[in-house]
Image (spheres, protein in one colour):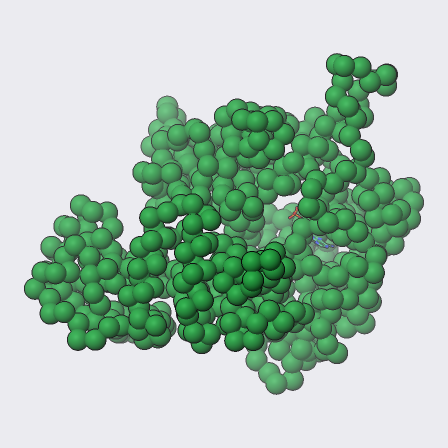
Length: 618
Ligand code: AMP
């Protein structure tokens, strides 16, 4: 396929923000792509070269891209720089200046060729790599037409930003490869396969080559992180137990970093650790890398657990904040290893040496896990007890708290309790310590805008506009404005960190009626606590779900001090979760209200445990 065809799609996608239109344009395009070229197209549409978990960054520095544009156009770098600072986008500048003094390319560029050369740019490392990158990019640009140059420049800068989300691609693939009346099933199968492999390029190409049946029962593979199974919440332990039919396994809910450990098997290769965001974080926990084979044998295996900080002397659990000191650290690793030692507490197995386990029930997986793991001082199993009465459950919960955990996870023992990659459901229910007169849980919000500080806070952000995630619409609707809970240093750090993401226009996927002083491209997730969720005409989270024209807002929001580096914006609290939080809060309030006949002044009582539409229940 000619690169020009893909570029023309880029242009069309840039001109629309309507999701249906985007999906339609994508699906019409995708059917035309050969199976072997499909992965490249899928990655490029997202501004990537490989699935995200491989962490291959295209983003070259502005100065490097400028140099390559100068060489390809034959214009002085100062001209490019001048034009660039005027247009604000080096891609636009390249397009505008392309005609001047250039010979037209001798033959059209092909997608495969562009992809391979961009890979070369990304892979050039070490001494002299900057010159190599400039050279490769110059050659590529020299073969490009003006429009192609514009998008090549944006691609290498890591600023393609077409707004094509993974789920939109899943929809588009389903529309492209399944008859209309099977769209829903196809989408489900594609999403499920993607949740297991985290590689949409691979899923797309096996779909194109072998059709939908190829995606059924896709197995977890060592080296490819599986999307985490997620928990629902309940307001009381009783309702959690009731929801599971009176019997459940309770496990300690550890407060650390969720890690997936991939053990390669006898054929060899390194053990890899992936975070919940599917990042390869192996290098940050060398002691866990070492400990895994001693505890699990040669594999192949994929296990999941929570990596928690422990006291170097007593071995007791330490607060979560301590482990965050180790995240992203490249230097001084040894010192931090001594100061903040960690332990991996395993709670699930996704692939066992004997075969795949995703489709096995939780009791079976837990049994397999216990048989596989040799407990050491670095690798342990989550404390667990099967309970069938509230008294025992409460005692277990209090033991969890006094052992330094934040609560418990109730896990369904039903035969259907398979590992549901990437799905949130009532097969797992989290229950945390309750905070009187506060919302029962914290909310993870995405920063989408900022208001400039005044007085003591002049020169930095004074408050932030934050949003939650609407998975259905793939948007970030606002939840509140928050300025409490930040000390001056944090605000200064946040300002420094986020200012490169400032935008004049609201980002395409942000839904807000408030206009902040600056818009921020969604990137950072902050944990907030608040007094309650209220319905608000100002904020757009869950707009119209409970009342036309109203969304949810968090009252008296306060930053807890915890930046959720482990969560991507799309992993922030979802609108669907807010609805449940709102409902449990309503139920709380009802439970506290004096008993009496329901009158017109009291809202009708909701079915206890009523689940919001579409949420699975064991
Ligand atoms: P939350 O981050 O509050 O949504 O809670 C869910 C998280 O709890 C999971 O993603 C895990 O990282 C963590 N967790 C801690 N202990 C367990 C456990 N025993 N089983 C499952 N998840 C656990």
